[in-house]
Length: 321
Image (cartoon, rainbow, N blue to C red; front, side, top):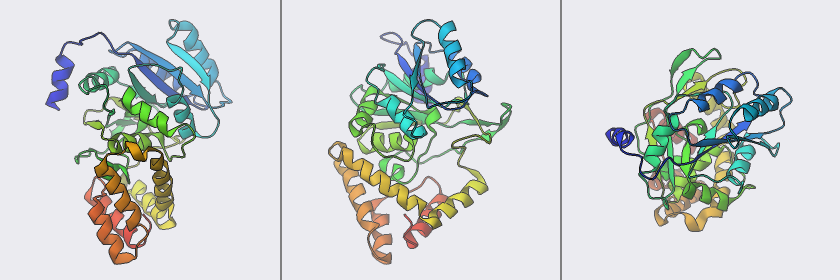
């Protein structure tokens, strides 16, 4: 963590970088204003919001139009989403050639950003060469519908890597900020690329193609947990039992099929090492029990925690990976 602190205290050479905030909305009237207000207090103030509304039937668009009119020109651009789910909405934003910036930040419609969120991300990203894919992400402070703190997201300690990304996403998209080199890779894969979630896909692409990932231990976002969450915090015993149920039903195997096919679009961009990890992973999934376990272990795929790896082993035994 010391390296990031040093960067935060360093001179911001070359002027403030431009950040495009990629905001996906759908019937988000209840909490949207708080999210937009948290953008306005960012200590890194060179940002612009690109809001893609996916067909809201409530007051979401009216709220966005209100902020568009009261903020300076260019601060908020309002788009119409593809109406094909939240992941397709974010892919549409990623692949929109009219959006130009130095860095790109995903945003949900119902969280609250701490004032230093963009500043921490930008200072780390500026330490990475511009031609290297780079992704900043991290922990979150969990809050309820009334913005009362209820805990923290898990603190992962194993280094981010492709062997982990193949079977686990370590951070929510709402924490992610990435550079143009990372965005360019996702544009190569394309808007029509079938994926499970945009955050997992981003982690997979950046690590697979030899990029750098920084997982910040300091929470810079208040992640709201409420009944209307499309995806809530995937932690706790209830979430673990839910994951086990999905594994038994074969859901994770289907998800892996989707990502394996998607990664085929970037085969030439994967590093040689990661291409081999993927090859071994794909081959192992087709083998009988003992060869499957041996080759999955040989591939190096893993989750972040011991309990998670026990679950992975159980899934492998029953060929649910």
